[in-house]
Each structure stands twice: as structure tokens, then as C-alpha cells.
Length: 505
Image (cartoon, rainbow, N blue to C red):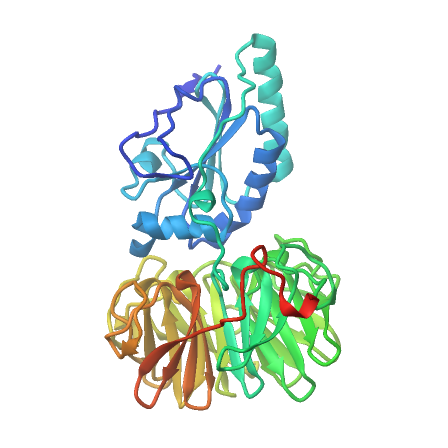
């Protein structure tokens, strides 16, 4: 018979979020506890959140989920940045900030995400790494509740928490905008935190608000359609069609700007766990967190963050499938079929290659647009833990979880998100230099005398670069002739719960 393992107590002197006081396992005796070891950059950790939310709501009287945030990147060690991630992903359980990996080591955790299940008497009964099966967890929790109810050791009392969203409601006009697309028609903004798209003039006049502002997967008119944390976009200006990576719906959407209708063109609304290269009918093929899009003729290329691959959809035939990447997480330069990526989150092109912001290896990758062309690393170490903030050339460059790329003026412009900077990369030599940003904050100005907070989307139009400054809930505009940064104001835009958009009055 295996010895029962008592769960180590949680530290009381570490920062805690989503609660007004630290929690202890002694205090939680009588409840089932799940410790979710996560880091907010990790796509697999984000995939676990819907399962946790489902279980929290189903067993709210006798289950407590505690997120143990053990940061991978330096930027993720800051409590304020974790607070912003809690708001962005609508996390409603307590989060312990474990920046020094103390709790991680006590529980012998080896990978993100890992879930540790503790029974009502304080003993560890399960530890699972990876994206756990909802049904298996559900069955285990119900079994523990039944067992301890018979023993009289379960506590059926709700736990009352003070959430970060109660302290800091998302009432800003934009909420965590993930990507921005600028062209002669204006600005298209993925208002990710508000689950909608905003179309505006470059001067900030609101032209359309697309989506109800409530998360969901619903096709229809602009005022009835629903998205779930949309990210990257691509535009067919001739036909006035906007393509959208509807990330947390695991779907691609087509927005007909003339007919003012939204329809799903790829994905089933469910996340696939099949990472083997494959292809099929777009509406019968499940996707895995599509994060950014690039249109090349009839091909729509997709940075498929969840499966660590680049995908392609043929818009003429509606066939979708893997273009590059085995599905293994890493940085491996080779042919399209043998290469490997690590959570690709940004995509752009010069017409000859696709350039990828490969976020988990903090590198910029090049992917050929013909089958015989290889995948290469333009700059960055290519190592999962080879990050930093170092300008230079090729493999000596250090970025930190870059999320956005845009090819313009013969350079790759990079949103070096966790360094809060914009960098310029020569695609031929791999030279990288910082051109905007100094430290985290919000400051207009010129060059290094500017500040951003986790910028993650870039788009060029004319002589202006537009930046989705995600944690500042803002769109910034850069005059690239002078490197002067200003903030675009949207005086007639407000949060969905604050006012009624003009288009549905």
C-alpha cells in the first residue's frame, strides 16, 4: 500500500492575488484543493483555464482552485503583470505568486502546467502535467467528495473572495487589445478583452463595433455576432473582407464589411489535441489557438500557437492544414515538414518568406513560401530559456517573448513584448536594434524616451506604425520618420457594459 503524502503548507508571506488575505491548506481543510502550477505566457496553461472555471462553478461549495504562478520569463515575476494576466483571462480563483519556485520545488513540479489535487484531509491524491482531461478531473473530484462526505470530512461552505476584477473593473474603451491592422480604410483593432472588433479612422473616429462584447461563438450581423478573445487579422481590401483569428474559439472568422455579416470559415469551436501534420475541410477540422494571420493571394497563413505550427487555408477550396512544423515545441531549422516552432504568435511576409514571432523561444523565424525553401532562425537564441534584452546579430540577439511582427521598409519590426520595446531586424543579416521603448510604462515621446506595456501587435500604413499596446489598453501611433510616439484617442468608444455602441442604437 502506498504511503499517503501530506501536502506542504502554502507560504503566507508571498504575494497573493484574487483574495484579500493569504490562504492556508489548514484553513481549507474539508475542501478539495487543486493547485494549478502555471505561467501566463504558456499557451498550454491558458488551455487549462476553461476546465478550471468549469470545475470551480460546478463544485463551488467544496472545491478551491489555487493558481501557483511560477514564472518562466523575468517579466512574469512581477505581481502587477500577473494581476494584468488575471484580468485579461478572467481568472476567478486565488493566485499565489511563486516567483522563486519555492512551492514548485516543494511539490516536485517539473513542467507547466501541472495540477496537484489535494483531498479534504490535506493529502496529495493526484499530480498531472500537461493539459488535463476535464472528465477525468471531474470524476476524481466527485469521487473524493463522495468518499469524504461518507466519512464526515467534507466542508460544504462557499469560499468568499475579493477578485482583482472587483478592484479594477475593465471599463476602459479598449481592453487588452491583442492585434491591430492598419490600411487605407482605417484601423481594425482586436479588442481582445472585450471580445469584439473595433473599426476606426486613423484619427480615432469609430466607424463600426463588431460583436456584442460578450464571449461566445455566434455568426450573424455586426450587432449580434460573438467572438472569444480575437487576435490577429488579415484584410482583403478589394473584396472588403476581414479575416480574424478567433483565438479562444479555436476558429477563423470572415467579416464581410459590405454586407456587415460575420461567419465562421474554419474550426469546429473545439480545441484539437492532434498535433500531427494533417489537413482537411476547414469547417470539419478542429484548430488549436490560432493567434495571427497573413494573407498571400488565395492562401491564408496562420500562426497556430497551440500546436506550435504554421498552417495554411486555401480560401478557394476551403482546405486547411499544416504548412510547417512537426507539432513538437522547440526551435529546429529544417524543411517545412521537419521544422519545429514554439508557440508562434505573430506572422508577416515580404512576399518571399513568412516571418514569425516565435514567442516561447524568443526568436524571429523565416519560413519559405515555396515547398523547397527551408525554415531558418533570423535572430534569437532558439532556446526555450534563451531570453533577455540584448541587441546584436543572429543568435547573439536576446528577445523576451516577442508576440508581434510586421515587415515594412525592408525590415522586420518586432514587438518585443516582455521587454516592452519595439525592435528593428534586418531579415538578411539578423541584425537587431531597439528603436522604441525603455521600460514598462505609458509615455509618449521619441525613441528611447517612450514607454509601452507588453505591446503585442504591429501594423504599418504609410509612414506610420500602429502598435497594440496591450496592457496599457491603448493603440499607439509612431511617425517612423521621426520615431515620435503618440496615443490614438477614441472619444466615442466605451466598454460594452458601460454604454451602448452607436451601431445598435
